[in-house]
Length: 83
Image 1 (cartoon, one colour):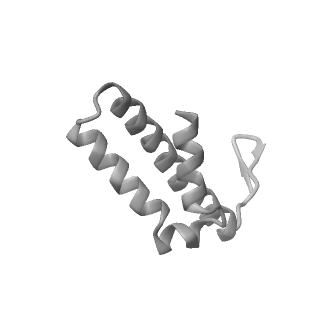
Image 2 (tube, helix red, strand yellow; image 1 turned 90 degrees about the vertical axis):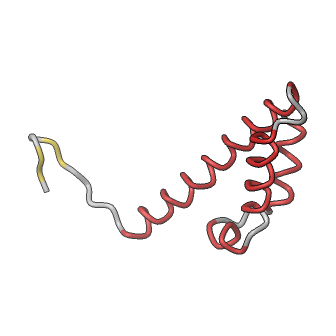
């Protein structure tokens, strides 16, 4: 396949699925970090607590465990320690 004189490598469906799973988890990590940092300044923030709870629920969900082999509870602990 050629596009603008550059060779474009076709990706497999597995690559796309893996990239999507990684992007979902990465966004959840970013959201969680952001919520934890906000809660450090404003511990009673409704929005911060809501995001924190939702992401923790995701990290402990069956869907999360289907996306990765990384233990969700361990990830929560590591992120809390980091922030």
